[in-house]
Image (cartoon, rainbow, N blue to C red):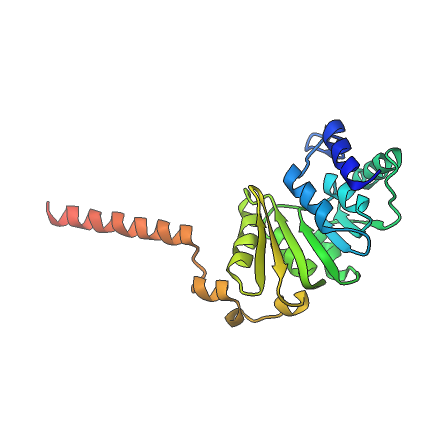
Length: 231
């Protein structure tokens, strides 16, 4: 089964590779647009890595890429393996590393990455940790994809990349963004803060939202004083 047949089968069958907080089977797929992008961006000879596992794992494996997935859920790799076996998707180029990405990524060994998908744990600061340790293996010209931008721990990583001159945004989806590394990832993560335009622009680290809130509070205080002065 080729990757396009795999995409169709996933959408048709909607396999439940996950379990929710109550232990029930759950299907948490990434968007169809992102799956299509993964299918086009990877292929035989590519080296890819993702934090998390699920439909995206199946698609990247089906492209023939040398793929690594990382997640702490013991049931996920077996469910993915079983689905691939039924659908004749070869998994000999896939390895799953069991554990939290914050623990696994600092010691992972891999060939230079062509693609890094950040779609694992979403609690702060884990998406940033995934970016930092995963990007160290990214080759110049490689892609980093940040999913679930509706969640601010993921969105802040994308905002940093958007404002940094070491990265070029190539795709902006509703809930994901794709950036191309303009240098080796190991060099981009080693730059000091003065070489990071986004950090320099932020100055004291106050985000646009925080600045707006601060300005609003200042106006409220000013109006309060004016009101008191006129009593």
